[in-house]
Length: 202
Image 1 (cartoon, rainbow, N blue to C red):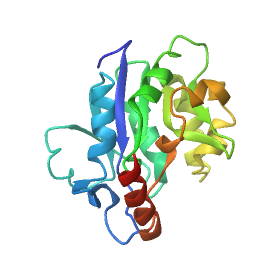
Image 2: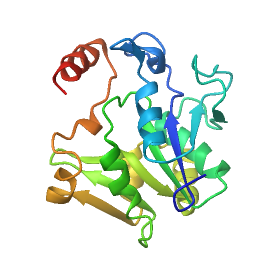
Image 3: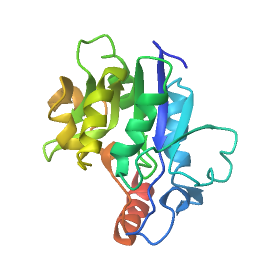
């Protein structure tokens, strides 16, 4: 754990049904997708933990990274966040999805800079929507997250809307990631093609 008691985490427990295989190991420019957010979090000065589903093997090359297991099966990113909040020894966890290959270290630093705020979450809002990841979540979020999962609710944005939060938006966000590429997700083969085009232009 480093940087103001914050730990970095990558959610990698999804089954990749839409892309047809484990998303974490889908290759982009010769590297597995998961290597990009892991590298970004480490470059931001954070230790990294992986959130995986029960029985899932750690991605190749990351067998030495700490692993947290989902308690709620097939609960999506919210299930991974729940496992992290329940496990983590410190106050904050900075969460990135394994399918976000273009996360900017500047954005991670910008999010971390608000860890002294009174909110329970620090996230970004682009013109399109509230962006749950990358996002900084305080351990005090656990009762809200746990309650949502026990009610069968799995939406990250729905939970965020019920939390006191600080939002990076507008010029403050643009200064950290002008193209908003940090929020690009690779969920489908079409997304992967788009990511490959984007990678060649960055």
